[in-house]
Length: 314
Image (tube, rainbow, N blue to C red; front, side):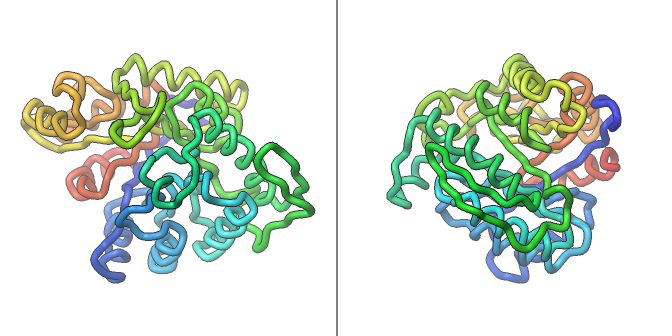
């Protein structure tokens, strides 16, 4: 495995939907042509496509770009069903799935589904119980499990995934407990901070977008990963991106949207604002400082950020 400082860059674009089937597929084809490594989709109850069938359509319509969930919400999915659907999508995509799973966080999702919004510790505990079960099922093991939240008896997963031992498991988060666990188990860890505070309850509602906070979060991943750190791909979820020759103006505009100051946004590793050269330099610095080489931003930035992808992606 290459040294973390030498790991190549990967770039992803997060999609939500489109006005038609053809437009949806065209987005993934365009991302593929621009050199993006992966297209991902969220998992919420609002105006977005259902993640797994939507990704299946993209996988069947492209040839090389990977498809990923960023992330499936564990709270409304059984581990065996997740494993079976993930294995099927990996099989249909000929081994291009990246399976991202999170604990669930958006209060409006829980309200629409009519299920309890438990405190963060309980939601994370459920996810921490489910993920090893999903991994073992995807690895071809026969699983009998009895835990606080899930019980499976003699469970198996069909079909076998194309990727061995299983599709890459992606975990994103910002808390000490979750990121330490992600370091222990995940293949890809995306370090997040929450900027949707109006729709979150508990510790997750406190956004800290500083470099110091990001460094602390990456240290938690390293703490969990220990000797397997070389096997873990580290990522940053970019919430604000803009290719511009007026970064201060862009920072002020985006800062109002996210309810943070322009100065905080311009100094944040979760934002990329500036010229192509400036953003390229920022990404190189983040690889050096944090070990992060996987960066995902939202679809509206896909075209303008493409020159950076072309310059840095392997």
